[in-house]
Amino acid sequence: MANAPAFALAWNGDMEPLAQYRTYCQTYGDRDPGCATSLGGKAVRSIGIDRVDAGQATLGMALMVHRQVVDDLVYRADREDRWEVLGTPGRGMAGDCDDVVMTTIARLLRRGYPRAALRATIVRLPANGGYHLILSVRRQGGSGVEEIFLDDRHHLPMRPEQLAAEGYVFIAQEVPGRRHWQRAVSQPALMVAERERN
Image (spheres, rainbow, N blue to C red):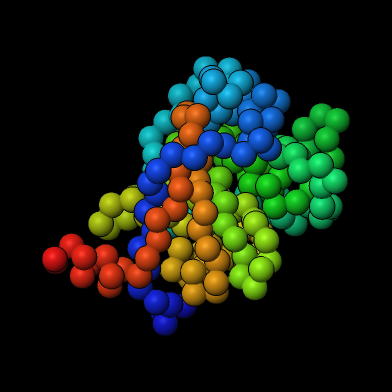
């Protein structure tokens, strides 16, 4: 995607979490340290640092785990939209995009990834394709923290500008350990640079 337009993605402005996320935290809050106590979180583990190292092995492991979840998934649209961790006792591998994200987070936590670096992210799909959940893996880049996205619609990790070039619109992202999510602020990087000069 060398021809993807320059794109800046930032997160700013609090937003109440979706009801599905609140229900998820009430169910899984004893295992997921990302769930704030005000949402039902009970995990005593730290959420850790907000990024993983920049090595390809770290991203490669995250991608491998994500693809395993996607490959094992029996796609089923929820009658009632519930975010669940698939493969837990009493729960099979039937689900949709939000279940893929939360299951991938659970499996990466078991492999030692810091929860603060793994963030559920709401996007709107192109051509009125509706809302969709993808996973941000925050990692140390050359000029600070960069976000790489794992999406069950793509086989490879995606940068925000690549998804934007396809018509994805970023909406909001969780902040592990906090009650409120943050809204997306995205615009072409050239406009950002122009504004900073003025």
